[in-house]
Length: 264
Image (cartoon, rainbow, N blue to C red):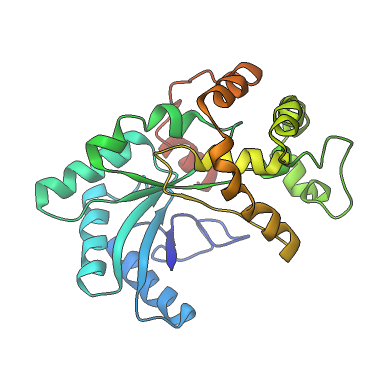
């Protein structure tokens, strides 16, 4: 069981409408947020608490100390980061080592055949040096890798939501890229979704792949990907790389500038 401490205002609020202690990764919010989360979950503790999004207004040392306080109270076994930059994770790990405290053990990051930069480039030196695990999300690239958008937008899909559509202006381009994988999936005798999920699982640096399903049928289809992992051989990966080349990009920002612009 995991939970999150979230940096950012509550839904539909701005930073000015929510209280100063109702967000962020300060000691106060981490402690109070953990207590509130455990109460909602009706649990005495969770396995991992994620610090969701970096907080540019709170020193990382304060966050590291606060997360260790939470662990010392028995409210969590471990802590992790979510959508942090490599530089921020390194600072957290080095700070923990300097203070003799517990490092973040896992990062929660987007990862799919179409979204590889953080996992396959930015974090690449962290896995062995800091023993960093990964809990990855959006393995189907918001549905682009399912194949269901190849002939248009299905009724009831998320692309019918104006807010989602506005937030993913390049979705049609991503679907076109994903469709290049159809021959690979057909040759392996699996669906495009199974191919995309199995590809993520096959990465030795990935600890967990998060999946989402609206129906039991979708869940069963997603779980079939476990059986397909053995089919993702080096040759198959090379074929995927040839169809959808991965071009590493240097991180444009540590996240602080974007967050300040968004919330102030």
